[in-house]
Length: 424
Image 1 (cartoon, rainbow, N blue to C red):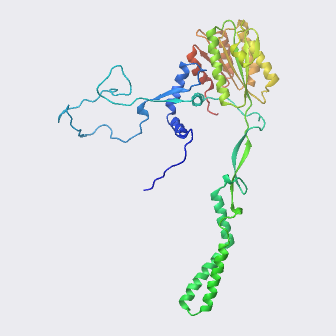
Image 2: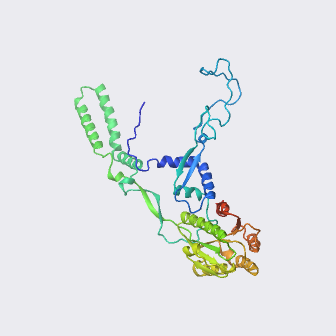
């Protein structure tokens, strides 16, 4: 029996590999806990990750055991409480420890749930794992400032750290065969001739000496061929290839009219915070355009979008017209993947809702990859919702609308809108 002792020094994150293996193994439990965490706390409260609990029975190693049925005979050690022939009652389900309880008991045993902490990065990984921008296509390469390293075969020059041992030894072996193949063949023949001469003509010293000298010369010639030469060295060739990425822009349209209560605005802001985190984490090259609107629309920065207190009446078409103008000025549909997320309480000036539908159907939607509308209201749908339903009939693959009643609906609605779709 042999033993392998690993004496390598472990770094600060010495359990990183085992931790990632554990996270992959219990991915279903962790993902469920992350989804529950999003529903019970603020979207922005993510700096401390999340505490995950896994039932003890789910982390036990699998074992083989006898199935139910059949006749079994078991012998238990005796004690002061039972005698031969006594029947032992089956323990009640959950009677052991581990689950907790309101009363103490004097029997039973079990295991507590396994509880551990995941980091902020791991929390966000599980949170956005199966989400993606729909219909994202590579329309335009944004320069060559990003690269990825890929294998490009074998080279005779390279960094010593990238030497390919197998290919180098194969090349050396082929070289030795080519340079010393004839000498090795003649050496084998000379050895056989010497053995035969010793057997048949042991007194023929002259020929024997000549063969011995020839054998020594052949062996010396073979030994002069180096086992490994610099000419034999082969290296793994790595090259940098430009990594093409898609140009994408996300328009965030938020209604800040007087009909939007503070609670409704807070839900809209939380939805956009979640969207912003998702975009910044999953996509390197994406621009975000913030537009606030009441009776008039205004392009603002991130700070003003989330914290400005300006309000007024409601004309939704003003935001759509501004988005149309911005697209015409800065984001050519031939080069950009254009997305929009609109949040409103659905309240709009009556004559304006049909205008919004016409703007979307005739001008905006043909240039967009995806448009999602979120109506934040516990009441019945407003006129804008029904007008947008007609838009969805024209563009079923690129238009979606959902309703949010309270803060608990934010994450489920977000997942419905940005769930990864199978490629068609």
